[in-house]
Length: 466
Image 1 (cartoon, rainbow, N blue to C red):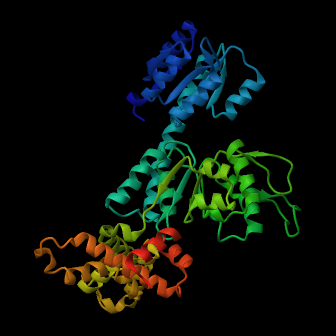
Image 2: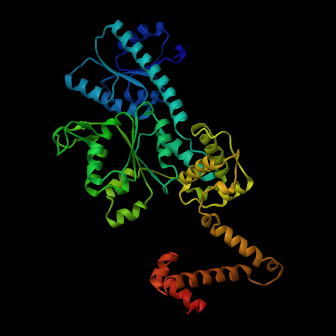
């Protein structure tokens, strides 16, 4: 760090202590700020000092409470507690709450210099590690590619929530990139130098998921021949991403809720609680409100997770991003699969753009990589794409095509009531088709159409459908 960046804030009501600290540290190139009260000190934290010397007892508040506030406002600052009333428990509590160090008054000036210098060195190393880890993340992990309004909304949400150490719920269909969103939150947070641990709750058998999360002690059950560290403990200091959280059984949901409340958990077969500083990010492709209503997901856990919700749009709702994604996945295929430089023909691009992508980005990625492997030349043609072409012609495309032909000359006719005529004909045809598919079952028809049964009966009567 440059000397101009070395900013220290002293929060202490003893003017003589402030004078001594300034006299000792200012000649070393540190920029000093001092406040005599906790309230004014917390306001000064907004000026982003890297190191804060905080008195344990202040006239307008408790230093430990101040420590907690500082961590919320500036989690990267190193807070050194100073006090003339040293007690074992206060020292233990301060260190548990994340204090960098704890010095007793009257302190040795040389000791203070060493502790402060060490704090700045550690902060510098931490910053370098954060940069290196971010670069590694960007190299090893796919980007969230796109510039459509809907994906820009997701980027903004990530930016707003990343620095706030709160639980996040990411929703969206399978294959939309929910784990990428979780990684982006992690790498842009103060926890970025910590681990990012991901668990898919649906891919692990329910009876094993608890031991995977919380770990176990040797002898906890048959086959437990050694101690196992759980993924919560493995994520200490970082982020735990729980994919498909709606698949957890309610018993495990209760234990997870207790961890979110207390930041403590007990491994299977143990009587000791373990603290873990972990940010939890959950994801699901299910409608969580329906899961709560049906009783398959605890309401209190839902509200714990749903502090902030980020909805990831399906690919069919951001088709303007497909050309960018094609370029991205082509480049990846060329580098990772060593397929050589490839490009798509105009017909192949048209098919990729029109297709509705029920499997979302994951499906697009797989289709492109498979096509790059199968194509013999530098051009990937339509025939190289293994794709369900039934989905390549969307409802929107179908209606536009039919309406263009039907309405070619209708706009020239006055007093035709075009809007009402077209809507009623489309609605009537849709109801008739679904009724036929359900063999006239009105309950199933209403459910398929997403309307209630009384509305359906009214429409049947209105259109004289038999």
